[in-house]
Image (cartoon, rainbow, N blue to C red; front, side):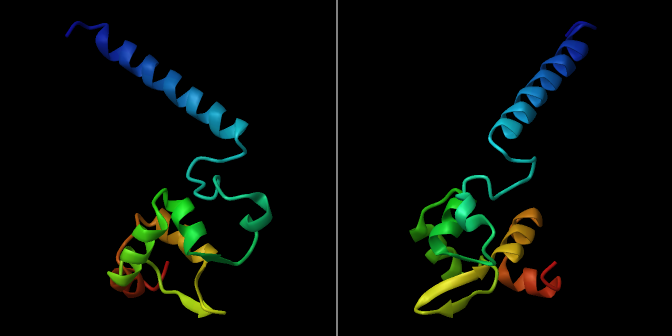
Length: 110
């Protein structure tokens, strides 16, 4: 590789980052914002159900049910027959790189 390779690579990466930042701004998201795919009408609710959790994580509801059964999701509660998760806790869990429930609780859920 010649001397010009590293600067070109840096420029290419910088351009990609600029495009990503512009796309995030255009879609109303910030970097690291996991709630971008959630409709604004439900994004401010304190709880999310398994369907919303699936959307946030980019997986199917079936995968969410399997993850929950395997202890791979934050703790949940059941309200009116639906499994619900604290939205703020889910977003913190995602930011913490999705640890297992056991590890998440050992960390103090932060």
